[in-house]
Image (tube, rainbow, N blue to C red):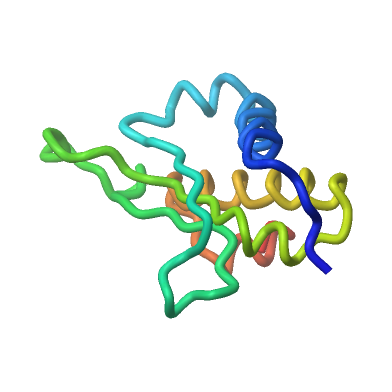
Amino acid sequence: MAVEVSDEDFDEAVGDALDGIPEALMNVLDNVVVLVEDEPPDSEADLLGLYEGVPLSERDSMYGGVLPDTIFLFRNPLKRMCETREELIEEIRITVIHEIAHFFGIDDDHLDELGWG
């Protein structure tokens, strides 16, 4: 059963998760925007988050003049997988960390090894 929270409460939880990222890491997040969407692309119905862009580890001196990278958080799949507000807040936090890790070039296999899969 999905947890019910308002869009505003969900967005606030995303903001809180971002506020929990150490300032030193947030200062490195260059040319990145975080967006909340209701649902992921059709082919990924259970996807919680998505990073689209050029990871920091792949940027070189030619990087520039590009649109911002995007971190998407998908509201409805996150709500569907959680039964309590507390569980949802924790899952949002984990998803934010997971997607920011992709910005730094950390792949899913390594995130699994670190317990953030």
